[in-house]
Image (cartoon, rainbow, N blue to C red; front, side, top):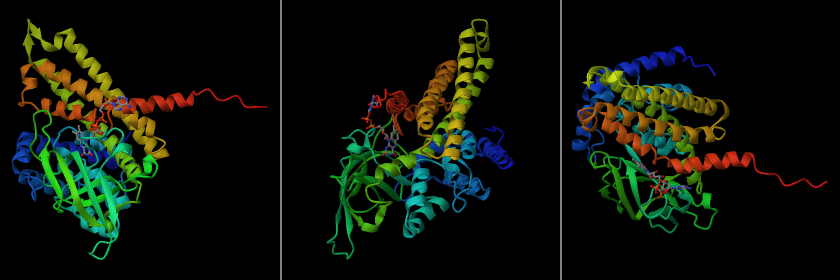
Length: 412
Ligand SMILES: Cc1cc2nc3c(=O)[nH]c(=O)nc-3n(C[C@H](O)[C@H](O)[C@H](O)COP(=O)(O)OP(=O)(O)OC[C@H]3O[C@@H](n4cnc5c(N)ncnc54)[C@H](O)[C@@H]3O)c2cc1C
């Protein structure tokens, strides 16, 4: 494994870092407020963020996540991972570079499984304009960590008087992140209840605004319910044409898994960028603040925070880059174990580093005068979203145990 990035990746990294520090970080608190105040149906991004997006697009810092040359930058997971670290330095930057979840995952599956009509109607606008989408899988009444138990139904009505068949969707979802202001929801619902557990559900495209598809409330998450939000939504006899099925029928589970593989690398590398920023702030504060006759930097408790954080960030980075490299060289399936491992390690590391940085900042660290509290909050979600820690640990352990399973004695 060669750790030296190519000239192209080094150049992109430098430009992303400079763009983020010059244009995004100075206005990030304002951008977060503008998201809360301006986003509403028909307004996916506030003006401030649209301006930054235009600028990023004009500079070619746009859609870098898609590995195919046709729609994206043709970067490998390893190369794009390096860029994610720099984008992760600001919670607002991924939106600016059109690389934020859940749009990236939705664009990936539209590019891979979408029909030409779907690509024209949804993928092209998501790639080129200021449009957002959401992904609707998790339900309040069933365990999201085990989506084989989903309850939402989509039944095919082939007698529809519109001429073609229609899916009729019924169910309740929540944590449909970004519903407010989105144009499209990709919903996962049971289409084949009698099939094997992993073959029961499918993905279906539902335009926001379709009759019966209703936003119930933005779920308040750690005291925050503004902006694109994490919405509870209901589907009540929602009808969409049969051709809105995304990918093969009954393959919802495997499409969801395919969607999450690269997404987890992106989230983890952004977590590393965010932790690196928190680390820098912690060191600067330790040099600047004095207590009990000396700088905080001279106190061994604080040095312990700094040493532990350095070790943990660098360890997590190596693991994530290794997982990305394995994904590039051996495929998503071969890298499943490594991807589960980094999801646990990077999320915990990010939370610990941000927590220590907040501690060194004292009351300032709890305030919103620094981005630390926002960064911590986003990191906390990562231990649950895209698979809770415990589920990843369970599958890691089962794969390892399988390797050591006692074999039945072979009969002579
Ligand atoms: C900020 C945020 C954004 C999100 N955005 C989206 C989105 O856009 N679209 C979407 O569909 N979903 C989204 N989610 C939902 C997320 O995918 C689910 O929360 C996650 O899959 C877990 O499902 P659950 O919340 O139903 O928890 P449950 O499945 O009820 O699990 C609860 C807890 O049980 C424990 N547990 C579960 N299984 C095991 C096990 N085998 N062994 C030991 N312990 C176990 C874990 O501690 C787990 O946290 C988001 C979540 C968050 C926090």
